[in-house]
Image 1 (spheres, rainbow, N blue to C red):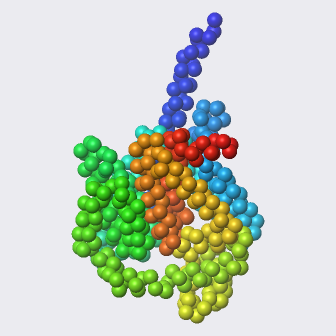
Image 2 (image 1 turned 120 degrees about the vertical axis):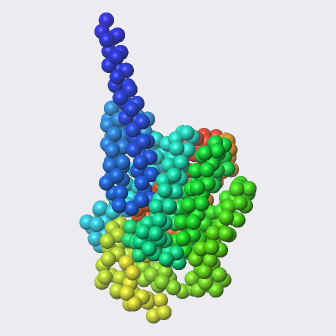
Image 3 (image 1 turned 90 degrees about the horizontal axis):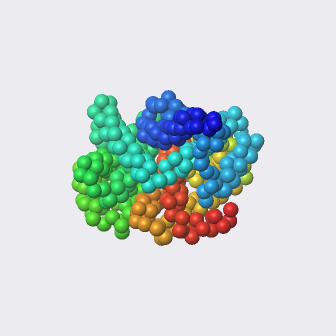
Length: 422
């Protein structure tokens, strides 16, 4: 007799749980939207911890279908466990414990949040549009602020001497959005959306070229080369725009044969890598610990710099390896580096299956885009520190996007093998 009276209560709480589940992707969208921007720590923290708290409540009440099951789960687990073990041998234990959470666990959590709450085609497109619009606004704001408000000449690298947004990191955000704009533009039918995408494409392209960094320029052309077979028409037009932009902008000065030869000769990066290579020799198994403040240990750096051949020795050792592979090897050792490459291997296998055996054009189309974007980020990572801050969020976001396509494509061989293994 009392069952009918419970129906309004069930309906009420059912709607409440539905609203909470909907709040998570909205808050995550805010987190991703503000990722490129500097000085927004408060917004970033609120938009990250709020969905985490809501998710914990929903898990306790069993009102969510949150899943840890992805092909990357075991590689992530092994890498996290090894990094955790390295904390016991860290040179700076306090900072390593902090960075283990803030610059590893937190990013893995972002990955799983994105995978679970954007794993439909509609929500994935919302995530793509969020990144495109956000980065277009960021690109315009950045160029206006740097060149007009601060009064820097156009020949100056965009972001030069800016701690929060240095030149080498600007291109990671802008190039990612540039590729998303190109791929969405090839499929978009609505006129006003095409206009938005075109504006975004132009803004992010100009901002990428304005950084005048070899990593961003190389990554730009490699990612476009990967994309060209499937996007010939739009990329032909874009290459024309790119040629005009390069001719009119100072970036043309670094693309001459003489300039390219000079930039890829022995320089500051090679000297830095030699120094940090000596650190790897001293701590080959567990590394020096996950904490990046260990790089500020002058005794450690000076000692290693003195052992470097004279032609590669720095006058004052720089306090960052400027290379993601060396960065990982230094912090978690060779074993940790191999586990990191295991993550990349599994991601590459997933990507190949998605592109080769996508059940529809949406999956294969975006699969190629995300692979091009990942290659672009990885290339830039060879010349800059990309495993922290906005670049790291982009790195894990791309992995989440590829995993979402894997989820949407159950017919692929890799999905079948994964389900069989588990």
